[in-house]
Image (cartoon, rainbow, N blue to C red; front, top):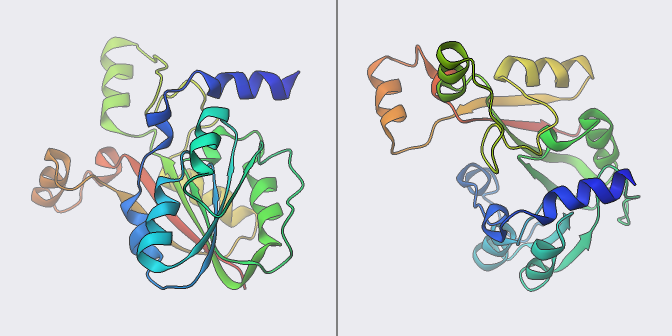
Length: 220
């Protein structure tokens, strides 16, 4: 029953919701001939980029039926499954990178999921993570001045989000569970008014302007 409810939540999403390309992932994966696992791969747009431009072999796991159907044409292999439930069908030490773009906030137990993924990550491999920043000024402005916390079909207050993170809270979660976190940064869309304001104020308000936090975990 729980599985059916989760999949039903995502079935109502427009396929464009699953087609976002992440510039921070492109910049982080800057080598060729790699094996990549994309968790929540959507329609496979990001993986298709890595295949075309960097000759990578890209695997995906996606919960949405409609996105899964499209992703099969873009990636080397795609599994339709809930990452929290599935027993991973990959051998240990398989992947150079595991990508989790806006995934952790959808999970009941994100720590257990990362631990599960560690086994299929090569030593020295990296898990790349983005999570929305609940400290964003648009969320706080409505909350403080309008007493409004309204869930939406996408964005920071997506109705499928089970958890909310700031940069500090996601770092604390990872460090408390002994993950080898070696990079964490705020993501501010550029070019944008927020990026310009951040530059003019020397980063003083970056925590309110960032839409996401970008993190890298390395397997020792």
